[in-house]
Length: 190
Image (cartoon, rainbow, N blue to C red; front, side):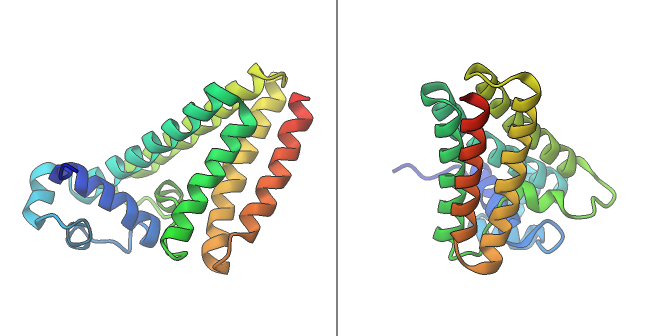
């Protein structure tokens, strides 16, 4: 297996740290240490500092989620897309022993401070996921309004449930939420 380039290593490490600690509780020094990259590399690759690194970490998480959703939505439809979204977050929380969540959500719930670029990147990510789900729901028989509402419900419910799973150290809430959302999807695409 080839070693991951330092820049990519920093971005992936930042996404993981943001999902664990949030933006404010994470320093550039800690990000470099967590990702196993030299501190100087952080400033070399990210002259915009912590804000630039956070934006790219959110974009990394967004791209990963888009790939997961796109594969299932295109091949099997909204129920499979929902299932893959749930499974992806289940893996994140379980493999981290309930310490990690979504870096996009983590950036979203913090006060933006002087630079709101990470918050804008998070808004774009949520819009990507919602749009993809809504498009699939429409393609499988839902009317436009129901598709938009349900796609928003799916993203909001799963993101919130991931936070609950971390607090409760259990995936029970995720399982119950997934079941309820699947019922809603079946109702509107029936």
